[in-house]
Length: 605
Image (cartoon, rainbow, N blue to C red):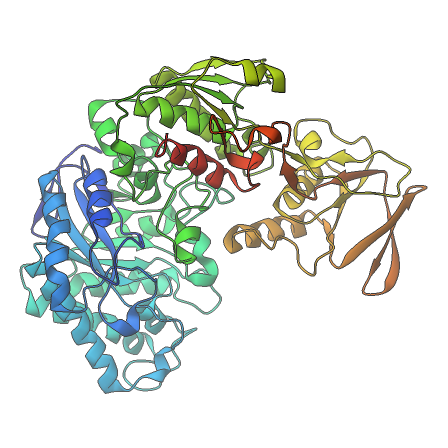
């Protein structure tokens, strides 16, 4: 059924695969950039409909630094480039109309101002039509501006735009009715929350009522999402959330309307997508992050190819980057938004050695070989992947393992020669007969001077399978690795205490992931102590001070999770032109940065 034709409103769709809207931060002050055009060009092949991500209908509603705009006629020319490139690839083109500004709440505006916002949406739709789009999607979800009016939790107005259900839905319905009146033939999709997943927020019961009203007033399809900013794990679900978290609410709404319903968010594999359609839970499959990671996903399905790169839902370079004001990227696809840069082939193939088969080394080898160089990779262990092999061990992190598989497949695809169990010494590296040598030897666990009568484990040793024998375990270090190791050991029945010298654990962890991880640790009864300065470990006791108070924790084993430092084995080669240092041996960072670092090397070599 995935490849069966469908229809939404007046537009015929060649299959049931829809590219969902995502902010890209690829525009230039709201204007469409060439990078944005290339981004959509790369992803509109194979899918039936592309919904261009959240375009702001007025300056007040611009939320992201390089978000695309549809607030003025001067944007139409650039927007037309997007609709044209999407059409050239055989897909229908839609654009999402949005407004979001968390500085304000519904009660901050007069009735006249709200009516002005309604007109802004209508004007945006008219511009979309002039720019050649076949449909618009009205963004009524995710705690964005219109969703705040819908929610009894955030809408405290007492006039006709607040209070009861009819009042809270009036703003959204005014927008829909206005767009349909101005453009009777324009296909209109509404993105709504099946539930806000908050106490006192918009519930599934109200969402069902709302869906019926939207259908009655002319909506041609419903895009069913969920969650607001504080519960965003329900619309950009990370690894810690089970697949298909929104299927139940999509089903409820589908049972109550006759217009098509689009299913979204962490929908599993192609077999899950097919079953969702077969079971009548939804009419279309909406994919966002999956097409960021694998822009050829739909074409591969059509051709019956098996090598789809499923999103691993790490959220580290798509959502996290966008929220930092950076352009969209992806751990498994560092080409995102830079598609043309990585198309360049070399006219002078070099013989290149890569030392280290972790994420940076594998990525460098892949992209250098893709560019046309002859690449040989040397790895000291008996398998590739480096610290990704450890990163996939903690609970809810298994999807990380796919990254190793994807990179291994690429090394085969581009004919990289791989030598495992091959430790290269400094003298050997100097004698290697290669034009260029890439050093990607990673990092090593940092050490601390610890007054202890027991030998501590490192977190890496534990995650590699060297489980402490004792029952009471102290983990020193409350970063991501320390917290994930705590969960790993707690699930094995250990009594775990995490001690962190800072005032907060997990400072560097993406907030959504941190929230879920801390909730799980709480359920596992992991004790977390902050502002902890370790004094001594002896006689089964760990002594520490916290805010000038001397305290003791019972311990049988200790695990160090205090971060890593670059491997300096080949440090003396750093200033020689033949050698390039990438990844953790240059600067310790995440797998996202390591893979990008390896890929970007191919742009200069």
